[in-house]
Image 1: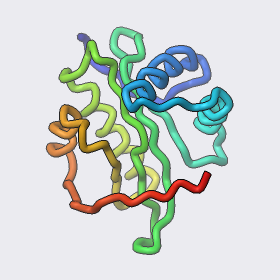
Image 2 (image 1 turned 90 degrees about the vertical axis):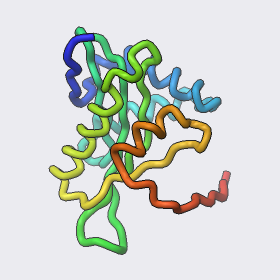
Image 3 (image 1 turned 90 degrees about the horizontal axis):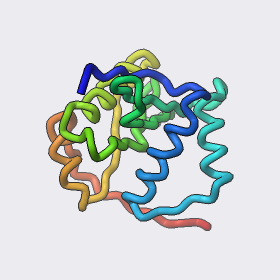
Image 4 (image 1 turned 120 degrees about the vertical axis):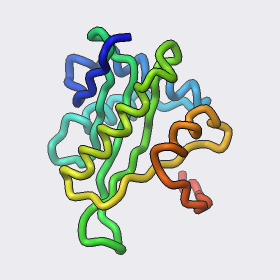
Length: 149
């Protein structure tokens, strides 16, 4: 694999993103209504919405995606950055694509004045956790969730 280029996704990347997004949802055994996927894509390109999508390209082909958002906290004066979704095509895993995407989120977060980047993963995602344990601190916090719909 040649050098990875990470850049913001443009409207022209929609089809390639849709394919990786569908694979990501399948990985987590989730289905979303098409209107939610459409709205998500539109949000990435709305300057009024602080949610972003980056793509990793190898030889001009999209091989990985990461979504992140900025939000305020009661604990800092600036924002935090939540890395919400990260997916790398299985054929290019363990070749640095995930690392490049995470490092790109770190850089973007710094440019927005964020004091931290954080994310969640499922406890069964042990392959990804090997990388995550090298790139960030595991905090030990446990997530609780109450679905309201």
